[in-house]
Length: 84
Image (cartoon, rainbow, N blue to C red; front, top):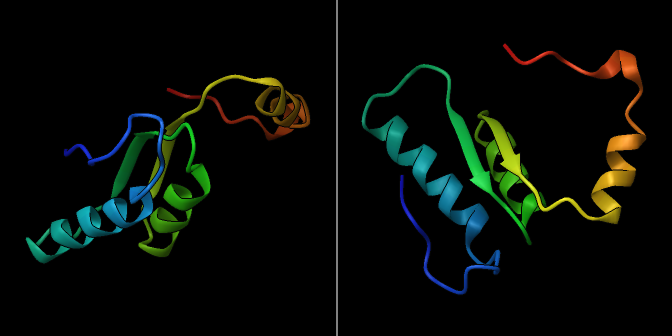
């Protein structure tokens, strides 16, 4: 776990930080599943892209606004995955 520098609502460096953290874990010998959990108010695409390129799973917390609500509403009922 680490915090990045910069303003709290800035996504600057978020993707790079995810990539570096996963690379560090692998260099330390971690061979299992990689998981990234983040609050990504302004750079979700960068965080998701970095996690996907590294083969990691991810979970993001997003601010619920009109665009996010429209995206949620567009997901068909049969596409939801239960969380255990």
